[in-house]
Length: 318
Image (cartoon, rainbow, N blue to C red):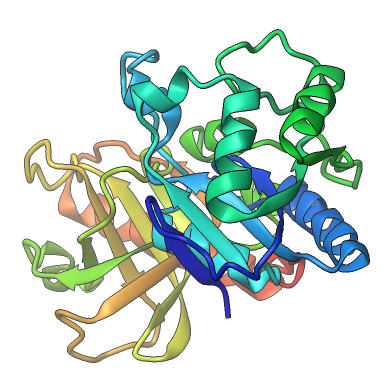
């Protein structure tokens, strides 16, 4: 089981680590390639493995992007996925302005002295430390000065290359959830808790589970309708989801994520729920009447059933 070392925490004195650094947002196919290589090198050297990551994205801490950068998954899921790939420790640092001023030598010294890092694997296109012009040769030389062996990670060159967190965020934001799933190597999901809504769906024959408690730092797909799988009450159901503001029903500007779960009838208010986005169906648009909305939802349901019955993306995992 992966152990979490909080900022300011320490490891047992006898533990020596092979580590890598990064946000690991999405823990996608490229990350999996890196972590597989890290585990292999650690085993040869007799070291435990660790991912050094941050609670908040450095870009959001430094405020360089204007609008806060939305992430693919919340921190808890990021840690779970890193653990699922067999990493022994997650070192969870609080990224600060002060830390951003560290050079690569200072940062490696911190990792060596505070956490017993003996080996550091650097992503093939990853830079760390305030001097972003440093090369891999610089990292290697600086590491030698503080007792850290620096290795370069292999690049993911598989079927879905190139893969990066920024590419996946753009895919999700544009509604291309199936492409995001291919890059991730697992289904793209959004989690929350079922909360009370306006009950308009129930009134027109399409009751919905309204997702509340969605992490505000997580990116949502482009407004529209999607074919989905829904996990609730320990089971998985087919369904469809609307992300948006329900313009036909005029319920106001509040963004909502509402799932119509097929062949399902249970009271699930307050239950945790996870929605796996499978395919984009259509953009959200205002219809002329409730009857038109009902016909459109019937079409969406039929299309979703067909797509979900033929879908094999979920089996295409890391």
